Image 1 (spheres, one colour):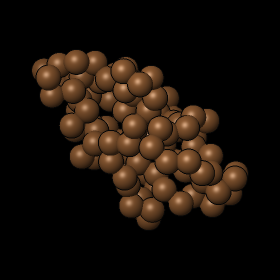
Image 2 (tube, helix red, strand yellow):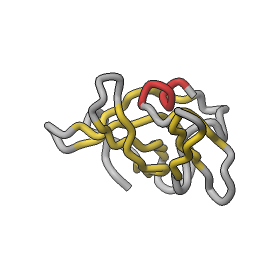
Image 3 (tube, one colour):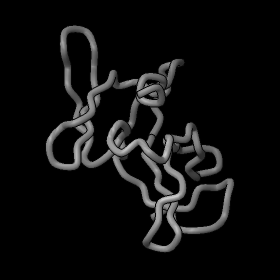
Length: 108
């Protein structure tokens, strides 16, 4: 569990933590966050990026609440296919594959 720096309230759980390069090539730590009322109802989830200056996670993008699988989750793995490096995200078996870059993961 981890607080996001911009909003108080509820608990925030992180999942699918990994590092990927941004468009400029700098490595960024990312995670899917889920904000909940206590341990119950999900009321927001999205992609968070670690801010080295403030040493906190900041929201990068918000996912629709009806989206149940197309986001970073579980234990990420790196996968190479030809010249593209992908990140595989899976709670048990890989269900999401996208290029291993911040912009591609944010757009998934």
